Image 1 (cartoon, rainbow, N blue to C red):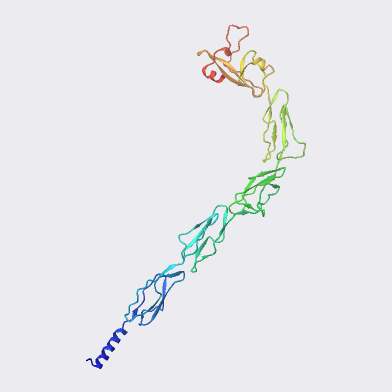
Image 2: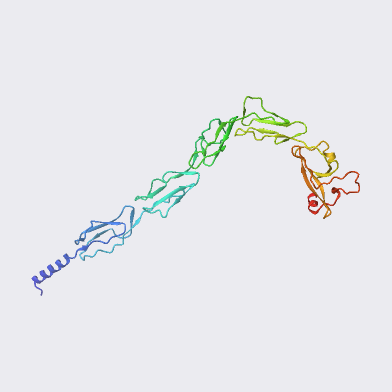
Length: 353
């Protein structure tokens, strides 16, 4: 039989041994905290695990008591990030992201012609919501364009509210007597403004001078302005070299300066020539002379090859040079063959076809 004194001693020894077993500092869990957090705990003390803001618990226990053994129970608690709702599709834009979990950020961009109405990024908050609110892509518009001095809108199709969408055009025109310097078409840009406006300036031209051997007609006004016109003509036997009608241009000059060119006298008495692709009798076709600019081709002989070829001659302001290769035969030299009656050389034959 064990004595009462021995039993008391053994009980005291057991109590001292057990009382000395404290629990150590609890293990760290990702995205979680422990309250209270100490380096050691007495048996019977409690600790509480909780997830950090932005994270939620899944599985496992959250509250633990330090046991007499001094060993904390195995903790299977996991803290996972909150997930924000699907950001959706940004109409006329794009959403860039990796995940929708806290604390990730998503960014936004718009297609050309649209701008972000709102922030260009949003963050998934601790509460699992996007902050700030998701934006929208709104169309870029331009206000009505400014009208330059001495100009007016020729083409302009605004939306309701008198604004214009990105990429749309407006066309300007200057008032009479004013010339435009710059592009008459302006465009609504991606910055919500218009491309550079043109300038309208008053332009005057000097009175056109009368050409020698000709005349000029223009409006009976004290001053001739931009777009005013003048017409030219020549006296008999003279040909107008240049356009019949000229116009005062934006630089204060006439679009051309026509002149009157003299006709050419004909010295050839007998020749068959090519005129505008047809054979004609030179002395008959041009009995009254050749007008400035008219061209004919004379027939010449290649004695070595016994064939004929052509050379061109043109009347230029009263001067007409007959090709040196051309030989005019007298009507009495009936036995001589005219070059126009000789078989054409190969190259000329191709031309005359």
